[in-house]
Image 1 (tube, helix red, strand yellow):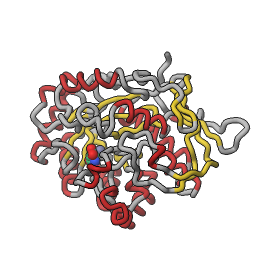
Image 2 (spheres, rainbow, N blue to C red):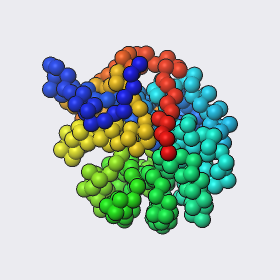
Image 3 (cartoon, protein in one colour):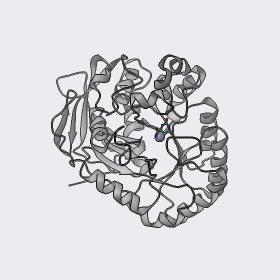
Image 4 (cartoon, helix red, strand yellow):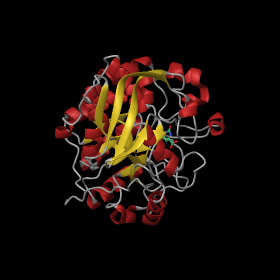
Length: 378
Ligand code: DOR
Ligand code: ZN
């Protein structure tokens, strides 16, 4: 099997399919930020349901976060997670490692198995939360072990400033997850201009929803970071060209749990239709989708994709997002009842049709692959 890096040459492969003006072929999309909950909270999602949702939404490669019920902070826990995933996944899955600053000696043991280190500086699901005083030692230990793999941060407001100070000192590659406010994005853009090695992502919920929707959605509009003001959302759209990736932050919780205090919304099945609708509305174009959901995530996280993997989308089909049609185990979306234009028609994984018109054709457990980062001499 030939594996290539997705690069600009691959863009040329994005072609209209003969005979239809609206049917497009795109490379399989990469979502670099999902929470599949397996192991530990498989009543919310598991490797099979989560990767089936990914395929249904056009994502053939996803990178899974470490904030499991027992956070993935040791090689042993990572190995166990990989072993569970192996027999269950139907899309390709890679992993991140977590830290609270007390597992630095584990870094050398896992760097060949993960796409980056995730640090939480603000409240999230699970107990992976660090104090900013730990940043310097974690950054130094990670950088000494494997400089090229990024550190991903959940860092809002003041926490973001602390992270950027440490990036200035260490020059470590950092990816700032789910940027949601004008202030944070403006700061990141300034530092990018001064050539700090940072990238950033935005989520579909922060692009398509505001704090007004949070009022209407009630608990189903609660996530971290929270939905922002109209002016923040407008600023994200205005600067989309400078944003590196769209990441769903697919974070399933059951309906019952949402009525209690849980943060997070689903996203794997709604990201692409929302982006295609925005293309229809001329707010972005297909090349932007490929940049945000394929080429940039491949470059930033060093993930390889397979040239015989692609998706076909029809831009002319309008439909309504319905909870009952979702594959995510928790069965709800903050975008339920939204009318969208642009639908995933087919998903081809390594030359084999695996999804067609919302139905799994060949989604045998274990048919997805665990992916690992490309080794880099540094
Ligand atoms: O809303 C969120 N949910 N934000 C996070 O940072 C974590 C996620 C989750 O795991 O539920
Ligand atoms: Zn997340």
